[in-house]
Length: 194
Image (cartoon, rainbow, N blue to C red; front, side, top):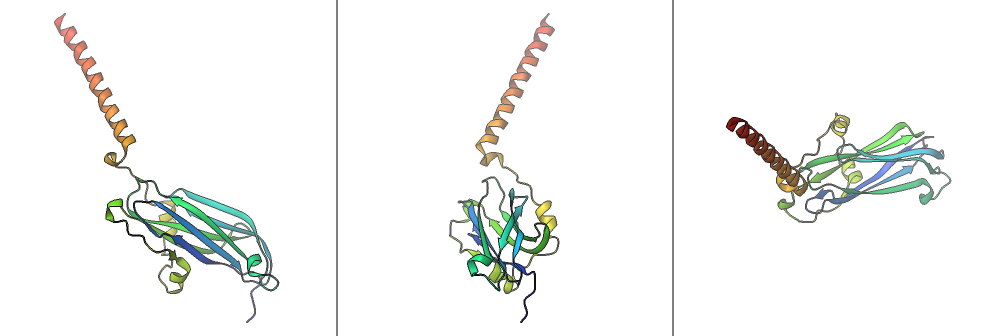
């Protein structure tokens, strides 16, 4: 089978763990491979989720051609740490893994779904999730409109009862309002007496 001249692919996406609860930390690893017959020196790999605040972009990655190179020379792997703040609601947060040719032409894309559960829902360790294997089985294909979800997705919300800082700010605001009301009441009472 003849190889294409330019053929770069995301060959592996691994989210470990893919489901988090009390410990809101995960790692996302992506592997890109040049399976084409031409060496590439302007490849970009991007991890992006506006909802989670992830915006990692590596440009000018070089990959040798598969005809003349070892696996190490034609494969590039990158891992990022993901930490989800405790005030994020439970839900599914998609992270796009984008592969660009010439640093700006989208060539391949995979979506890794990070599932966040409330801490009370259990502390059972979930297995790591290999997106490549699920995609081959037809499970993890991105749905239409995924771009909308990434760009205009859920905004983080905070519960006052779960955040000491917000509770302190709220209490301080009530105290200031009470003091201000007492000052106004005292001034009005004095003016009435006169």
